[in-house]
Length: 183
Image (cartoon, rainbow, N blue to C red; front, side, top):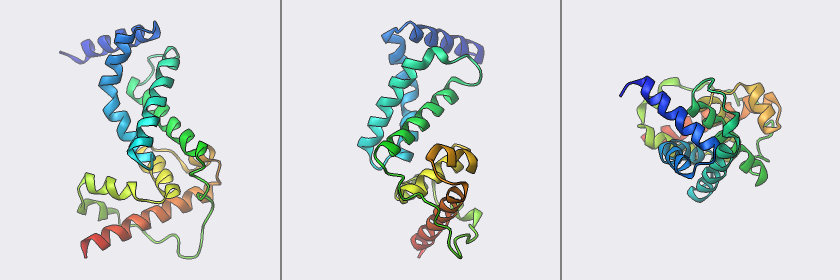
């Protein structure tokens, strides 16, 4: 089956979801929930919280699906919803309160770019899940979701300096954990 056929099928599913067709919603959920759950896990402190974020995210997707205008990928549109849902959950539970500007002398220790090549993806994701919440949130937004420091600051209600500092500290934190694993 070619890309065009898959695209048409997806557009038909989206149109059915706009009409609140439960069968189409189930198909969208089944297709995208594993990838969206991975996003939720990156931001959540545990699997149960990630499941709650996943549920809230799909409620938002289905309630706002009529606003999807077939510009860009549908999955990309959904990803934005899930990242925003995760951030709302963090804000609601006040888990970002420690993401303040913590710039201190020596906080810009250079990150060894190739250090991540020493571990497989699963180990890296496990380490990231153990990061302090402020570090992890900024790291996810910057590294995985491609947000600028200005966008991160706006999303989290922190200064751009705090965003830069949190990212720098997250990288150092990760680098130290990887080096400790190697010992």
